[in-house]
Length: 271
Image (cartoon, rainbow, N blue to C red; front, side, top):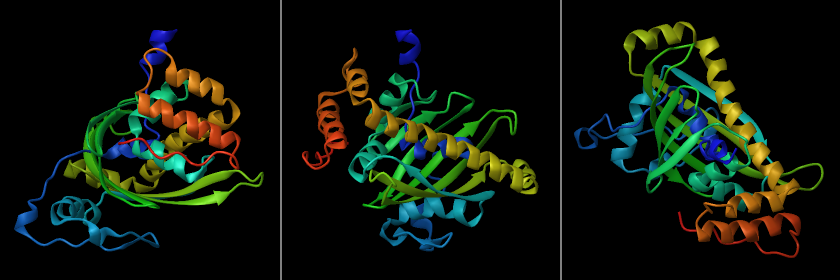
């Protein structure tokens, strides 16, 4: 049973990894060759994309300008306070381990460097996610990967994913986070890209369904943290335990969920 559990991981930053469905990593544009500018407004929301350097801007621009499909998903709610939501989003390995050990998902994830991780949904999709920009309420990601499934077998492509989050209150007074996700997807194959465009309504539903699956896993993790913090902490410390700094953060964070007026929010562990 233990070996079966340890083979499953997810990154609910999952919020991001689930859009891997049509994505991939790599700088396909030489930033020195031209000046690139990405519009700030996407699906009615403003993102501070002018803060990005030219290399990153030029890498994302072809995906946004020549996308095969564009999707807006949300707003969706995750029952976690902002400090903990952001921590899990920015620490995908810790988030992956928790969802894995609590048996909430089938995905796997591992860090490849600062702000860069690999992920798979365990169902034929895998890719690498690069964090391009972050602030208190926004994330911008560049993704590359491949998908081998029944809808579009063996396709590769790139994606730009924009997240906008804001804290909200539930009817019972608990803190939650509301998230809107905007994704631009560009398939590598021109033929499949054209076919995908013809099937765009169906394709949009496929992407939306995959994104929602990731948010549902994050939602279940949030509920588990509120409902059974002892089990969450047990899984975090069970052999092999999570890193000491992650365990220390989770101890304080789980206590803060149970007694929000008595425990101050913990500082995030280093990424």
